[in-house]
Image (cartoon, rainbow, N blue to C red):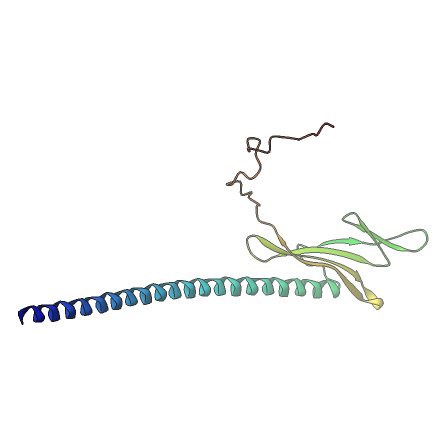
Length: 173
């Protein structure tokens, strides 16, 4: 009789121990998934904040560029704007040569840039006709990267010492 009770006690202990180990393992898995979810949500929040700031900065620069264009269209010359005025040829044609490009039948060519952030700017080029025939044409309205470019040479992709690629291979027939 005594051996039966020992077997029952032994069986009940292993049954309880196995379920405890399974429960602990499940809790650990849930904790790992919770930490991964937290990390992902924090990264998404950071990306959203940077994206929002980037868009806000761009539209602030865009608004400033629009204000400068409005001043140009009204005949004013805002600070920081480079203006090339047309010269009339002997044939009576108005001609502007600006930044190595020629334009005809326009009074002025204006070029300016508005800073977006430390590494980007909005570059604008506009053709203008003033007076009774007032009109304008935007030649360029472009976001340009102005930061310093740094090459990533941490991985030697192409090198003189690479095995199997030792120069030019010629085939003699």
